[in-house]
Length: 388
Image 1: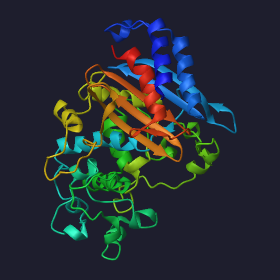
Image 2: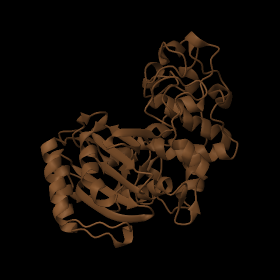
Image 3: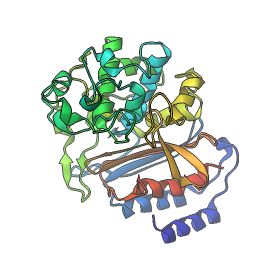
Image 4: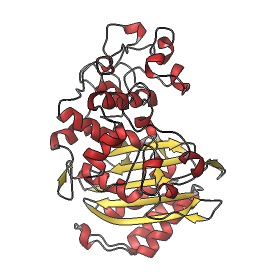
């Protein structure tokens, strides 16, 4: 957002918003905020989008904008499912930490020992690649090489013939490079140790207890016909929902094939994503149900540089990004996602309990200091209203 527009928005907020320390007593002019929210969506040429704001366990604001299915003129509403893209990693991280709490996974165990075949950087054969490194994007595994061919199995990619092209020329832990492939391997690890599909496991430990309708394949949702079409930045249709629902998915444990799911395949409604933000701001608990221990939530957010072989300067804790340019003198936590021209954002403040999720099915992907401008603009609008 330009400084001029940001200043105008903040001035307007000062004119008509009154906030209090209690989310239940928070007062604001909904119609004015709706109009400003729509202006942000319009500024970034959004086809369809949603924003929800939580204050602790409470949903304090939501706005639905534009079209879920542009050609059919279907509007976005509270029942619309969006693909979360890389926010999938952040959500999956909660399931990972459940497994760590129960001793089925260990943050510093060699990944190859879990999936039961060798995974190592050929330039550094004797150095372990760990789950902690994957979750901080310092594993040295890249998205190049065999990952680009969806017909490859995980063992194919790490075979002697293809292994070299899948790694940075840096030791594990020594270099930061965002890796969808590495994050997808976490799904293989989860299926290996649970004997369940990632989808089934996450439903049992996270989604069902919180009454969340989510799935790593949209065919498994309660209302699959309510998923969005996916668009390019100019609004042109890129992936029709009917085509997406025809894509095959095997909901069984298959670690050698399921190395993409946890990178970005999760679908969910905005309100349900709000519940998961509340888990984080609530120290692992939502509405009386404990998802994770307070210790696990602390681990998710704490600095990982210097821990167990991680020397790279990474902005990520455990599948959770630390944003230092959103609020003055404060770290805001969360995750971002992009797929085609869909932008998804989760931002939350552990001190105040403020949390915001932004989901779109196509908009401008312009970036400002590592954050999509539409997400930064929406945060600039919502945070002064709901964080006090």
